[in-house]
Length: 373
Length: 220
Image (tube, rainbow over all chains, first blue to last red; front, side, top):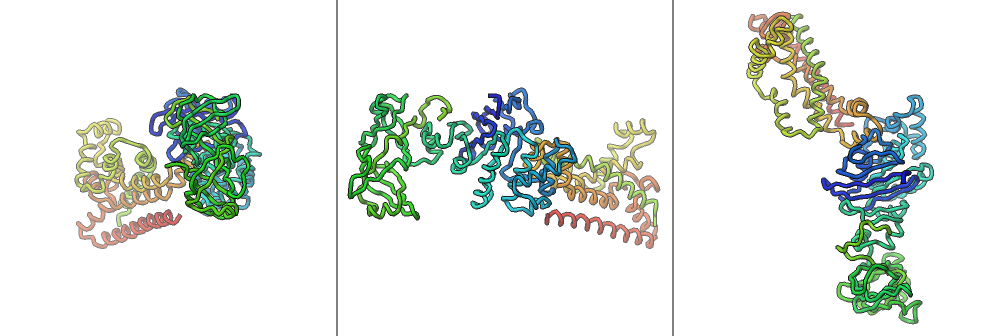
């Protein structure tokens, strides 16, 4: 527990916080949540720029904050990349980095600054002022400056938000490479789920300053702990159902939904008759072929009417209405949709693979706090 | 040409600028960044000398510095001479009536520094003092130089408050603007004209510097 960054933060105002964050050395933890969910405030609390009402911040065993102790930012060994980069406009790229290397002997600061700028692929641009650099280059200077302190933790506040898509991909790749060389806890604030999935080892889902779920990105995406998390993750195919029966011996939970009985992977902890939410990822929805039997077609067959069939390049997004307000979305290959002559208004049957049906607590149901996926 | 008056004016301007540099910087920084209750009224107080008739300002300063006031008495007991109608009294008055000229450009300059740039300095390990010296001052300097130039120019040109506060004592309180008035009263048009032309050129150069600096800031 003593290694890495640990933060537990609580406050009521100005932004309510009830958040927990752990990040091991070498780990990249993503803080994900909509705007106003308190992501930036959490980073500011860790860096010492904002004082929460209560909680604790520790890094590698050193206490930074606990209500009575509150180290100023200067005494917390932390590097922070601001969303706006906040570069010193009157200094060159090298000057920006050197100014943050105050702990290094004066004679060695320049060498350190140059080495860091080389690390972030900015060799040759040392003498440029921030105004003479592109957005991506400014972001790199900000990263080099954050590393100049030899921090014990690196905090990145939406570092890729202000650059174009191509530059963003390039910078994300560079960050992934940088992690191999800098083995410290890295906390990345983002509202971009794809970014979190691409870069992070662990993900913390935040809403209104509260930690809703923590875990590996693929775990959270496959098994959100609540309908609220599923909605924040923008997962489609989120429905409500009633538990009909628990069959632990066959690893199944039976659900009643829209007149169908669905077999789902066993979800302990829910009693028969209980209202639950469930979600199925589009890749677990299989469209039956019309001309011949499809694989696994006896597993949760659901019949409905094609409501929408939108072709987008190689994939076609299909939505099948099963009951009022209950539509299942899926993506299929466009050639597959053509072969089946799929069109709005026609009847279609899909299989919902039991393995892919994830049952979770309904909105408003209280079942423990911040369950770990 | 009254060289003594010119020297006195420049001395007064120099001392005023020198003393207002730290004082004005402090007030400007506080007004720019600190959340203060009644900040609008504090700003109004600083700006008051801009709109108050010099005679009114001079009258109150004279009352505050006079022999009946605690300040006047304290000064009398320490220095052994009255504060009013002395160079020191004039300097104090000069600091008060130059406050808006010094504070306002500096305040605008500090306000223009984004808060996250200062926070970035703290997170980079710079102490508050280092942040001031290495980040805030270099970014605010055009505003600070503007302030000082305006203060000097305004001090050299001030007439009403100086006359009310200092009178017309050669070598002590007779500044160049008082000397011009004095020469006009004595029908010495040549001396008045020479000194006026000099003040005109001086003021033009000073204001030119201020505009050049603000132009440079806009472009950067």
